[in-house]
Image (tube, rainbow, N blue to C red; front, side, top):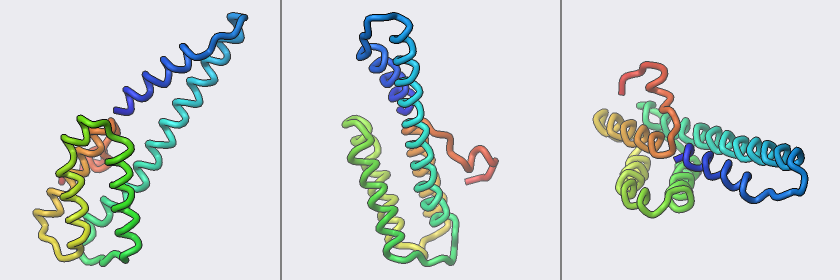
Length: 142
């Protein structure tokens, strides 16, 4: 999904800039492309930071999260679902978002199998946005 955003950002930056001199046009295109790619990097960083909290909650057995922390994660999931996914992806991932939020409400009294399922669903959210799941990079089994 992020690759699609990057491609669209490059296309938009090329098609919207129409200065008279060719040299200036190329400079403006490269500046806009850099700005758009910087925004994509910021989104990836934001996504990873919020999802790290979610992964921590799934992996910790005895930690009882505060209500404010859980609400923050749930609001983040709502924002991802409503604003960052197109209609087809919303239909495809709807149950996963609902399940993860229900899982968060039950913490810390969840079964180990539910924790594994939650990590699998979180991994699918990473795949949806085209970002590498950090636990797969580290070789941690789910």
